[in-house]
Image (cartoon, rainbow, N blue to C red; front, side, top):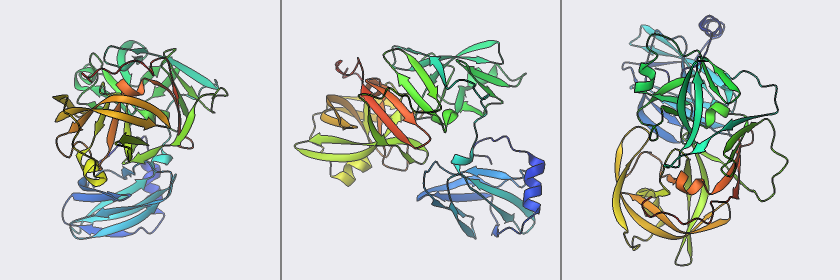
Length: 375
């Protein structure tokens, strides 16, 4: 089973495995659980002896971390550094050899044609659902509608869109002047209204991404822009490869600090996780404005209640009277992560440094516009 498809030379990979004595663990079942940096995913992996090597891409981390594979009878614990990989063998039922490789996500090279420009601009429109709408071109001929979703990793197209390419391969995808050859494209169970799919932060990994909501463009830089006046910097936190920053809710003169996923693909304003509320002893006395529901990127539906948060601090910038959805139960992630949707994020011009994992925010012309409680 491949977590993400990679362009790897099978011959070279097999040769590499043959040139060294590799650790071996045993298994009677094809199902394998993985603890990646402290997050355990039960039965996350299915052994595939015919895939040589079978590659697991570890969740994004700027520091060294432990990754543990658990079979039904054995385990192996591996320390993965940024940019590194580790090869080993899982022997299934004493006869099938499963060549396995753990790869740091920092090792993944994107397949864009190298740009001669220092910066490349991708124009967008902000539609009525707050989606960052970008025109993409497939195989130099077909125009599709995509939205930039920082809560997503790679390219994802809806089943309907992928169905149009059953008889031909998607060899190329173009956004603005940037081109991806043989792009890694996965299925999206859901996309924003009217979109054929979405793309995430990892397609621009090791670059600097500038999102300018005032002028409606995304700029992909090789170095930080010179004009940074008014921006405030903070550290990006990758939790299970989810793009998060730390922010604080202020209520009754007390601050409640948590991690918030950047979900530019959502038309919501803000979502908080019930486990985080419990851990923080967050009061449940806020008046319920309405009850509603929403669906995540996988199409799963969640019941919520909506309240109004009096004050929120994001990168030291304060927002007031923010509509906030509270999940009715555990929600879409095993980690207690909260969410910022694009109804909130569109109020900032954003610079994302994926070389040093920093984010810079600056209030834009939308910052002081009133929130809609329908969000």
